[in-house]
Image (cartoon, rainbow, N blue to C red):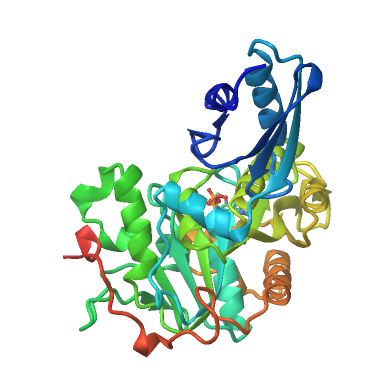
Length: 383
Ligand SMILES: Nc1ncnc2c1ncn2[C@@H]1O[C@H](COP(=O)(O)OP(=O)(O)O)[C@@H](O)[C@H]1O
Ligand SMILES: [Mg+2]
């Protein structure tokens, strides 16, 4: 039989595909037990019980240990890291959280995500924010799509934010109190081509949360870039209490991609508040309905994730022209089918998000005024 050290060494070849480190260094090997006739039992601790890459670990652990001399059989078991162990894992990964006080007066942070681009994340972020405001909520939109920023255009707000005496960035305000922040507000003509990557991106996103004077908000909606890339990861780390709304088209193929985004969100313990199906059918002025992007994908995804389908937003040209003109459709035509569907989704979101507690800390935490002074430098472009 191999020694414990030899098994541990072998397990170093098992890499967590998302955290990109081996499970030994990540502290995810709970136990190794040796039994008669060359049987080895390995228990791996996962971040979440329904971890989608469970089968990857199952195969990789078996392969690495069975290759050792004297091992005839490998049993792989799973359990879940405790909250404290997860915190330890975050620290090992060098992950930071926001300082106490940042976003203390924001009751709900909702990330709007999808697996791919062009499904209407930004359109729905802009319109949902306006709908929440119309429902009497204090709402803001943060454009976290640093490369493909489009929230300023869709909400019709452009300009340079001012900096407060406390060196905080004041969001721009539009449509009767909707607060907006986007990288666009900091870019000059020459900057437009800058490609942001890794640490720079992380820093910009962090500052949007930490150094922006969001004030009291019921909802901060965050328009994510497509996919499960750097920005989404950064947000997931910084906002452990954020909820996710997944946008998909009715197509089964789109729904599969959206499922991957949902899986990643869940891996990082972010709760999924619901699914919105967008581009669900087009109805002609004479009432004939065409299911251009197929049918049923939203419901399928919602069922699969066991979350509510918050709404089905039809294709409507005015939703697009409204977005292009910076006027969310529901402000000008609240009875339009797309507007109605968005209002329905906004009400569903309100129902799905309890509002009693501030997001970033418990209710006993300091109020915003008493929060720790802001650390870190303002966005590099803000100066
Ligand atoms: N339900 C809809 N009806 C008509 N046009 C839509 C609808 N949803 C989105 N669009 C349009 O489709 C394009 C892509 O939407 P966008 O919100 O930019 O997607 P994403 O942010 O997911 O990349 C935009 O031009 C938008 O105005
Ligand atoms: Mg977008």
